[in-house]
Image 1: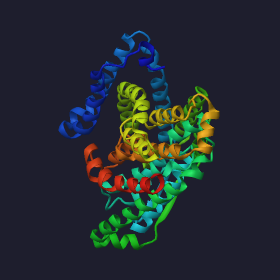
Image 2: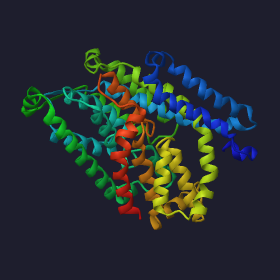
Image 3: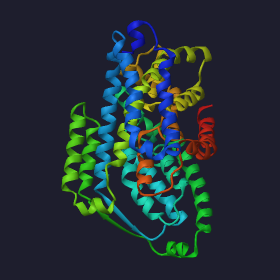
Image 4: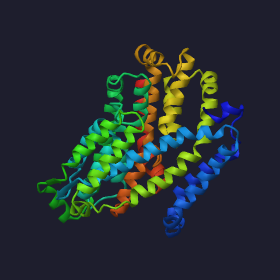
Length: 428
């Protein structure tokens, strides 16, 4: 239960500052004070998150408000770490340089896999071979379009694909509802992004040295080691459907088995270290803590905003999307689903009300689902796999844009027009 409900007041507006400060630190400090940030980012995250936690502990009944974010954070880190470790035990070797067509096909396959094994699973499994097959000419847009397609948009077809859709499934949305209602927006968004990527990649390829282009004309050769880890991957995906704490225990067991049974040589070929998951765990510890006041304000004002604006599906799409770009898209999805149910005389706690909305009046739920999944690609923190992909790519020496560079150079001029067109065609 939110603290606002416990003592009839919202947190003071100043409590929004730690969240803003953490976002600015993540965006700017890697460039302004690189070495200092690399040594001290855990302290910064813990300090800003601790300020928020202390407030809720000090307010009567406020500690209860922290239980849900704590549970979500533990689940987030466990699934991230488990998939990171298991994927690190699978080495997909690629020889030869990729052509624009091969790259586009790879991203298309990754987009489909994102709905089958989840955006996190697909991202962790495919990011290393994606970097290897473009090693001679990899640029920032290779990392960005991978995040756009594999880490976000691709996961819109099943509840397994992205956490907001899975929460909807748990609340009463039928399993195949997402495929039935989202396949056309998914197809258009994926197709447009793949086409844009191909045009950019083709221009990059034509500027590459002759030796790189000659190597790309040769047949690509693929090799896979560590296929036994696919069983561990299957166990993690199965665990998603289990209640807590069995879900987390099975994921941890699968990760430990993978780690101890994978030959050290395979980890060495993947340049496997725990640095990326360490960075994600520390930074998202602060993000999950500092965003609690922002979520409180969202939950408090969203019904009033929806009622005053008479919001239609397109409004829900953009508002859900805008907030999902910077807040956790799972609670944002639930907040607006709760608003929609309230406007239609239903309750989120009643699966029959959710089923009724999904079946007989799906327009707003389609908009909320699209906004939560698609707009997660607008920033590095919009969805968990985004930052993980950036960390792994940076570890491999690949070019990745900074926080603001990602938004200004790629998300706003490329992704946002695509999402605007998709929203206009399907939700107006």
